[in-house]
Length: 325
Image (cartoon, rainbow, N blue to C red; front, side, top):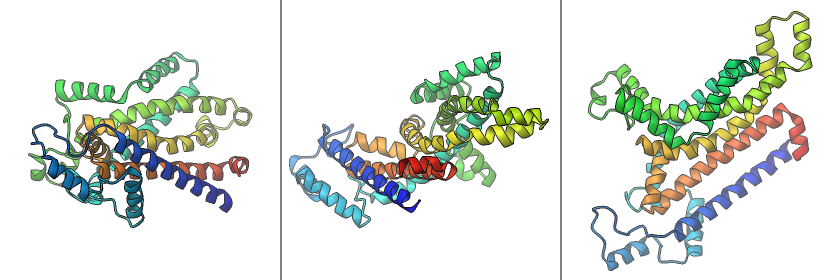
C-alpha cells in the first residue's frame, strides 16, 4: 500500500505540473494583453503600458516568466492582480468559502437525490415510473448547465419572484436582518445556483447507480436472503444499497471536476462571488496571476479528490490496488 500510494502521489504531482504548464502557455499566447482598453476605461499610453509590463515581468520571454512563476510559487507567492491591484491570495480567501458553500450544497442535492432516485428505479426496474424517471434523468443529464440556470432564474426569479436572481445576499436588507434572517437570506440566494448544479449531478448519479442497484437486487446472496425470509427493508439497506455503493466512491471523486467546471458558468449566471466568477472575470481581463491561481487551486482540488477516491476504492476493493501496483 505505501508504494502504491507513493506512485499515485507522484502521478498527481506530475499532472498538476502539466496542467499549470499548459494553462500558463495558453493564457500568455492568447490574443489580447492585460492592459488593453476595455469598456469605459480610458486607454493607457504606450509608456504606461511598457512600465506596467516591466513591473509585472511581462516584457520577458515566456519561458523566463514561467520559471519566475514556478520560483515564486515554490515560496508560496501567488502574485498581485493586474486589475484589482490586490494580492491574489487575499482574493482567493474571499472567494473560496463562497464556492465551497455552493459546491457543498450542490453535492448534497446530487448524492441524496441521486441515491434516492437510483434505489427507487433499481428496485422498480421496468415499471412505468422507472421508464418515466429514466427519461427525466436523461433530460437533465443532457441539459447544458447555463441553460438550466437561466430557466430556473427566469421562472423562479423573474416570473414568480420567489427567489433572488443573483448575488450572495440582499445588500440593502442583509445588515438589518437578525441571525435567523441572515441565514434565510443566504439560503434563498444559494438555492437556485445549488439546484442548477445539483439537479444535473443527481441525474448523472441516478443513471450511473441504477444498473448497480439492479445488479445487486438480482445477485444470488439477495435471492438467498429473500428465500430465508429476511425482511425487505433489511435486504435493501444491508445487501442492495451497501453493494451498490462502490460506484459512488468513483462518482464522488469525479464530482469535484464537474462541479468546478459547472461553477464557472453557474457563478457567472447568478453573480455568485466565488472562484468560478473570479476566474471568468480574470480570463476576460487577461489577469494572468488570478487565472493561474484559480487554475492551481482547482487542479489541486480535482487531483486530491481523485486521489482520495482511488485510495477509498483501493481500500474497499484490494483487487483494484493489486491490479495497478
